[in-house]
Image 1: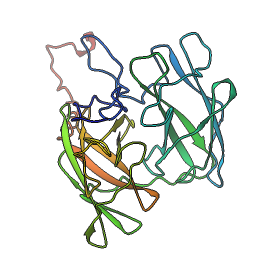
Image 2: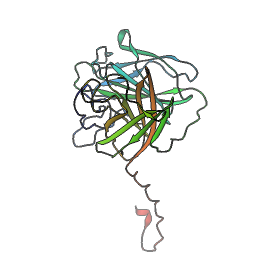
Image 3: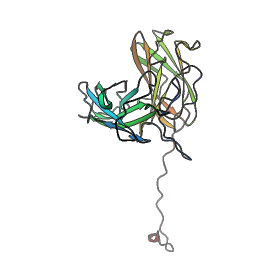
Image 4: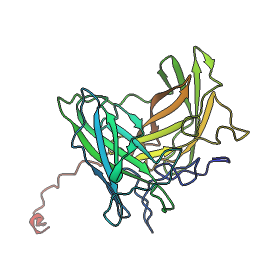
Length: 293
């Protein structure tokens, strides 16, 4: 993980053990598909074995990854100290969870999980690298949580987030289609936190989800704990690339005092495209037959 972070592609972790991102579908002559929008890619498929999530109590969530041969994948290359990273969030971007299930017999992944934001439709992202494959994948699928859905409006864009007495400040701007340096500064009780603890081999993990379709971007900070140059806070510097203008929800995981916390922000990349103009009503003309078109 040592060394400067390369420019991140528009989704996922990255083949380098410490930086970058992955999950975009390679293509020739066309923009890559952002990670997490597809249930299958390059012969791999995310297969839920649990039909729904419980909004009331944690219940086992089970799923498999099927390989190009149709068989469950049982061998993985760890990325950031885990064989698979699981992100679960409701479609309105509430109830974000970043967890790590256990791999059971027959390639079945399992973890107790509750629908954290209550009833609604959730998106489940599996971020992983099959053994023998040169890069990782991010696949996604929807799961319902039964009950009365009460959507939450997307929070307004802002520069600060608070969680458990910590304040995290976001510096930098998201630039569509280009690498954007983002600096997140962690303080507690007005004092800089300079003893952040490594979590999954880094001082922070950042996930960005695009409002609307939940296109997925997972990036990591410059440097790594113990590389001789990276400080344990208060600043964590990331390089992120988002695929398009629009609103994004950013989720920062960081560890301090033995507890992992998540700070969340809304950020806007560029200027969203204007709405298409309303169709004009053609005027009648005695010399033009409108029915011929």
